[in-house]
Image (cartoon, rainbow, N blue to C red; front, side, top):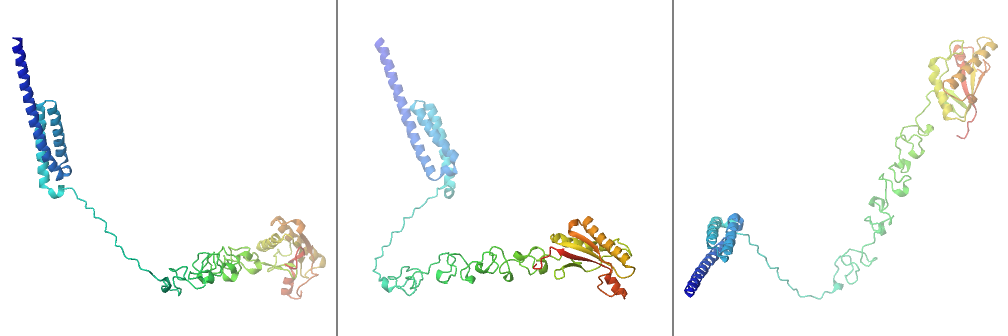
Length: 369
């Protein structure tokens, strides 16, 4: 009895094993067929035009193989069905758009084969490649036009300014053709060798130095280079319009009289600017020591005029000290009455000229200035 039961189970196992093997074979056959169709779709460009369908079909085929190998035929059949559906969709898409889906083929062109030209013997003594009159066999620079002096090479240009040394008057300093190779650093049209101010644009009249204020006085000699002036003021504008320094007579000459109240020593306001310019001369010439002289006409007695002339000289001195700030030690006041006339006292005009104040420089004026 036991033997019969054992025999039954053995036969049943063999039957089941046979059925399983048969099912696995069928599944593998279906997978192979579908994979062939899917590869056809991929070759036509399904990964470009139907990327989702292609990916699902590939995954379903892998799952079907895995389930089949584990004996899960039901799940394997489901994955095969999915693979079949999406493979068909991928093929449909690529067949409708063959030109759009097909991958671009890159053709690699073989490089041309080199052409071998037979070498010919060249006689360099019959060729002048640079046409400079020297044959290549004697020319040290056969491809550059040169001279016989330099063995067929161009003359050297040590400073690299484009002007060869044989024509360059400044061969070691880059220069300009118009100056035969010499530089004009400040670009004022005056070559550096003749320019006294080579780094500052100037004018020919100033030997290359500037005349910034265009007053005809070159900046190096101009004490006021940015302000147009005159030569006698060393290039500065004239400071004094009402006074003149007369070095010959050693005077600070005034162009108008100091005005006083009639018969008094009170200076009128219209003379303040005149005295300011006198003070400016003293400030500009600190070495000057001045005698302020008072003079009168002959109207009235001597004593009266001596007193009036001294009072007026004192008034002018006091004004220069107190108002203009001149050092008292530089000023002496002296009245001369009517003893030193400069015109006739017989006429009104002459008497007007004699009523005056003068500024005599008694020390500090160098005659050589």
